[in-house]
Image (tube, rainbow, N blue to C red):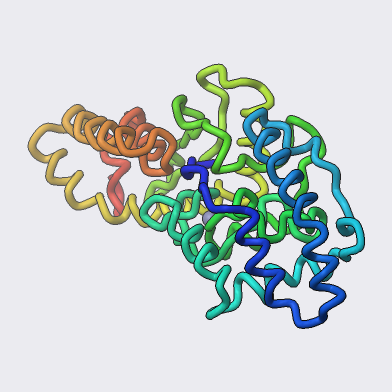
Length: 283
Ligand SMILES: [Zn+2]
């Protein structure tokens, strides 16, 4: 749900590079014959993506005389494989996400390409650059075969959907020792209902609450020492001010990062600022 600039790679050339590697002459001819269908379907995909209407694209088995298994092989054997011509597009797509950070979770590193509309259900888009997004292995696995059934579900598409102009990620501090944080998506800023519903789908499907909560536990341990120092010189008020400053810096970088949400919750917690930050012992 973090934006990636839409790639401008040539869909036709990528398809041609894959088709040219097919050894069986009959299959190669059939593949070449559907080139225009693939281009038309891909530009329909692009138009529907802009309108958040990917759920209106029909699932399909194959295209004309080409079966799904042969379309999918374009990806596995003729694009993702090292050394083939279309691998250049694969590699170029993979480095599009900023800082090599997975655009689905904003946590893991990009390790693979995800088919936003899965190649099992939408094989026509197996090698369409517009359908391929760099992401982490965890998200790729958890997303699985999920397919949109309406405007309210389906994952956000990093090339089309923009949701980070408003805060929707919220954390809450648990009064444990050491402190912990829980995360949830909440429509605080009046985002469009369907859009927020898709944020929720993705947040739940990728188990981001658990991921962020684990990361927050590490962060809470990391900052305890410096907070003690701030507390000794200025008390709970100084700790709150310090945490607010941290939150602002993180929000500048990314309004809905788990760190921005965490610091917002820590700064707002009187319990935490008044000694809850300590890792152990009685306070
Ligand atoms: Zn991820």
